[in-house]
Length: 255
Image (cartoon, rainbow, N blue to C red):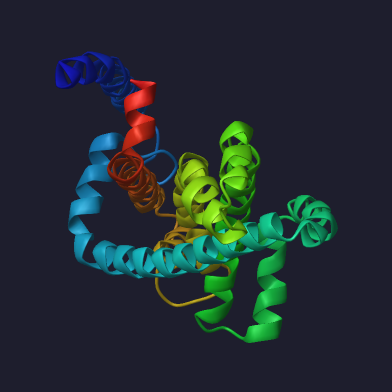
């Protein structure tokens, strides 16, 4: 039944995408638009398969970079959220700074990180980690604050320690909120990796896009964009699937 409902919900977007691709193909073909300016979907497919070996090399480099940055950012976000929650003084001091930090454009930090740490992989990882850090930190903090107060008071009443309350009540209650932040960070990590590769480096989809832009190869630019979108969707679905395995009680309650 769930599979049948999923298929019913999934076919309308697929039909819309197919129609848009068909209109695009016909518009480019009948309009006589130059392929270097706006390539047709068939042209994009042909060039993507022709340059597939190089595309895969850059794709693997981007995936490796985004996974490292994602893990660092998520780990840091969970640790910081836990510390701020357990130490109210720290939360009062650092919470406003976390909000203010989001007013700084990520792309503006890239040159500064390159100046501080050079052109290696470290500034790229830091940039991706910063992009992933905020959603995880804020969603986890929100989860801690939404803990059932009746259960909290009950555990205090029966003599549970602060550590026991945190690990047995607050942390499990925050898991659905944490996964919300993880799903947001999963898509942001791909974007952060591409931006980091724009700013410097010799491999990755961001670097590949810069090369194709210099050669006026819009078809290969579209190939890179499609791969970026697919990576974001796959990573999002991976986190969503992991959420169903880990937070089973929440899935049962929402169904």
